[in-house]
Each structure stands twice: as structure tokens, then as C-alpha cells.
Amino acid sequence: MLIAFVLTMPNVGSWNGKWSGESNYYARVRKYPLEVGKKIINQRSYYYSWNDGWGANIEAKRVDSKEAQIIRKKSKGFYGYEWMIDSIEKNGKILNSIGE
Image (tube, rainbow, N blue to C red; front, side):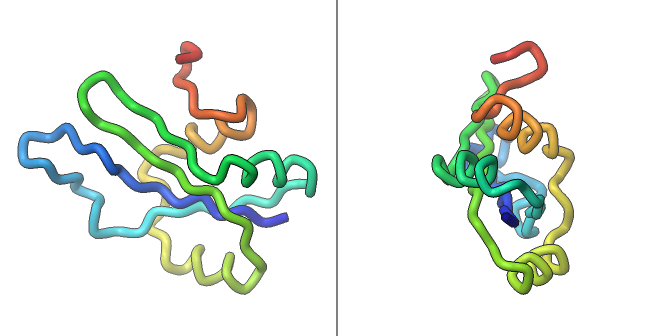
């Protein structure tokens, strides 16, 4: 099963209320065994909040190989937040490195 993870920053804690990456599309596609993939897409949306006013959202959706190819071409990477996908895989939610 192919799953696309799409990153957005719905809560921006910067001085000007903008995220420097907001004009870009950030997504990753990963392949999973069916049972693992079902657990990930069951929740569909994962949110993480920092204590400085910033918040990230990751939408997880099942895609086919054609959609995956388009997403990979369009994406500008994942802005250094791949650790969030790793946490979703491991914990079923986004936790930081100390488990919060």
C-alpha cells in the first residue's frame, strides 16, 4: 500500500504570521504492508504542536502508483520533518524525541 504524507503548518508562530515554506508543496510517499498502511490511514490527519505557537499537520492518504509519481515530482521534500512520519509509523501519532 502506498501512502502519501502531506505537510502543512496551520499554526504559525512567526512575527509576521507566515511560514517561509507556505508556497511550496511538501509530501512524501512511503510503501507499507496492507495492515500497517490501514492503521496509518485510519486516522488520516496527525497534528503536532510546539510550545512556541507553531503547529504542523500531516495528512495521510492512500494513493496509487500514478498519484505517487505525481506527488514525488511536485513535492519540494518534507522540510526536515521526516521524523514526524517515522513517529507516526512507530507510535501511531507524532511524538518528539523525548516522547511528548
